[in-house]
Image 1 (tube, rainbow, N blue to C red):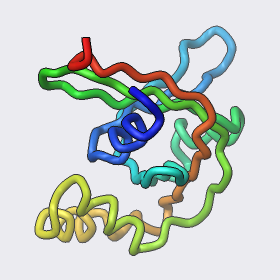
Image 2: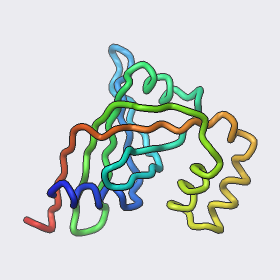
Image 3: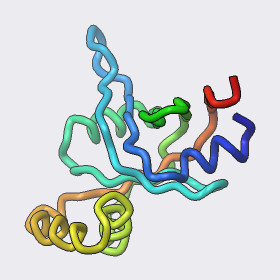
Image 4: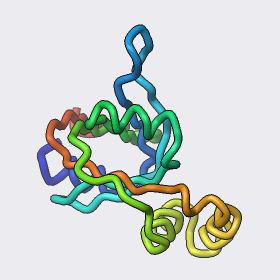
Length: 139
């Protein structure tokens, strides 16, 4: 994929696999996450401030995300970058993220069901630096 194609692909609503360096002697932590991205911008996702994932992200200061097409034609985008911001997740960001993946009605239910832990959620922003991508439809 060229730069514009990979950025459009990343902007589509895929579930990303986030990977971050773990402790010595352990494999990297790799977990699925919902994320937001607009071409040319930063990637953002929301997670618990006290999670193992967040502990490792703070320590490493960088991470990678992989998104893929699970249907033919297959394709993927891998992006690695530095964490630029970690801050309290705003309700609007949580809503935008939930609506992207669940639609408005189910997002409202999700947000209501997680309202008691909303204050423990942070948004992480990542500046894309290194990319790998493949569009198997082109082969």
